[in-house]
Figure 1 (cartoon, rainbow, N blue to C red):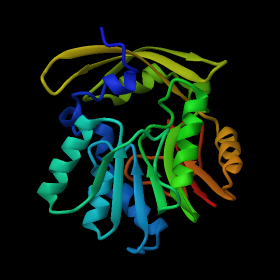
Figure 2: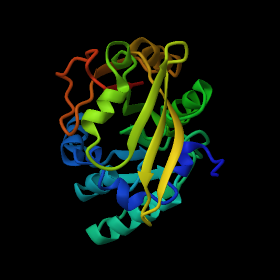
Figure 3: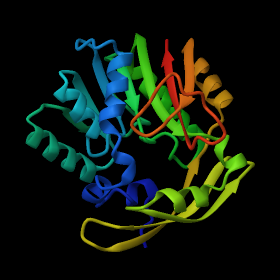
Length: 254
């Protein structure tokens, strides 16, 4: 029995399998959007929070950006370093807990995509610590770009059916139970690790409604906050968030 938090247990030995997940296939288009948001300014320093196996950090580094990637999983980071070496790029990959980052005003931009830490923590307070620490890592004129689970979606749709319809490869999410009092979805995640061993984990993730995100970010000093639909590989400010969007894209400037 693994007593570690599910988000630690899942990524102990799941790097190669993670790279096969369907949701990892939008990297190029997502990086196109990030470049557009940065106006192609290669002088800007980027921190990739919850970088996983480094797909965004490596792609942005290929395009000439200076990127630091942080993640809680050493297994994911080992895979990221291996991929960066193969790609011939330098990325500063570090094992860090996003709730306790050591950086103070060092970066121009923070990205936190595909639920990179936030909103996976056990409590709302822990999730807020991630936002706070990432914000503290930014310069006073910094920009934060992240995706998170759209709390409007489970009010109108079945989370379990969404996963049934979309999870053609990788981890399988069953027994979803959405709690309206906490806006947390509880599920049993089944996955095969990189050694071919099958695991089951009791997981829960926090969904946020747009007004909550806006309030949290205003609390942290952001003034310019935009919330849009997050669609795989085609992020755009032109896509208004709807109740049918599983994830939201958040762009905030201080």
